[in-house]
Amino acid sequence: MIRNRLLAWAQPGCAVAFFCAAATLPLLAQASFAAKQRVAAPEVGLATARPATVLARAGAPAAATVQRVQVQHQGQSPAGRDPAPAFAAKVAVASTEVIEQVRRSQAASGGQASTAVQPQVQAQSVVVRASADAAMPFSPMKAERLGLRMPDDPLQLDSGVALVVDAQTGEILLGKNDTVVLPIASITKLMTAILIVDSGLDLNQTLTITQDDVDRLRGSGSRLPVGAELTRGQALHLALMSSENRATHALARTFPGGVPNFVRQMNRKAVELGMHETRFADPTGLSGQNRSSARDLAMLTAAGSHRPLVRELSVSPEYQLALGQRVLTYRNSNMLVREGQWHINLQKTGFIREAGRTLVLQADVAGRSLIMVLLGATGSQARADDADRLLRWVMVSLFSSGPMPAAAAVVGRSGQS
Image (cartoon, rainbow, N blue to C red):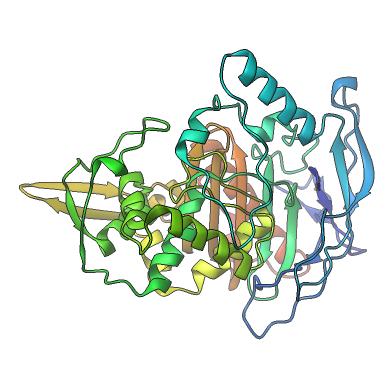
């Protein structure tokens, strides 16, 4: 299994001043994005990813010793897919398998039945029900357990995982631990939205919120009471812009075959998109078993950006829903959308304890279409600050060899160049 890593810039002669003239930032790797479903325009060809140089962690304590090794994906490549490339990786001494064994042991000692490690989900996936999740105590953020928040991160990102991809060419501009598989929280809803839009179901059909839509796994609240009526299109709007869990669950429950079939279709669609490190267990993201890598999520973001309705609803800053005599005002869960300083075309945020704060977005930056993925941030503000750091890095990097546009002089909410 591929572990945490930080890609380093592979092109000679590239050095960029970052934030201030006194600090020199080594630019991070630029490698081709290997994918069945391209993170690029359909006509753009993508080559197999090249091995990247690893930035070694200096002065790491003995308990967090890391080593540089060559790692390959386990198992055979699906038919029609190029063999997975080898990557230089930093592998923690404590493997994921060891961590999983410890978790199961702790669950058993607490009088709860241990849960077997689920196999990699393919097209014929089995639904992981909420009862299975409920049998497991919620664990701390996985990004922290795996030591992905590196003290020598040159961008000082709070997020354990980061990825920046050119959406037109598929080139990876920056990668930090971007092949590590982690819980993704409500980024899941982006796949839910894609299935609903592709299904051709009537968006004007009225759905009724039922007891089945109430979150009994984590006990999260909702402003939609049981018995509330809204259209499928309205439920889709709330799912994408404000991450409404009951609305999202109602979309899956009213899908032909119900929630079990919907989850199967989510996993089938993931395989079709080339997201081979991804599996879904529920349509909302409340399950910690919904997992993916940053590279897979870049493919999901690209797929969402090719659907105009998904783009439009995800970046809606505000929406009012009439429920009888009441009017509920919903606002976008992403502060970057609410503040309006980015040209964001598609986005989705997420949070559960195991995932931390997560984010995917596709934005236009100085005439260039970019996809950004952040996983494992410790808070909403930290997540937004990381996005700003990536934006500033991109602006400086793209124009390091020529005049910098005025927009690059002051980028982000901090107002610093």
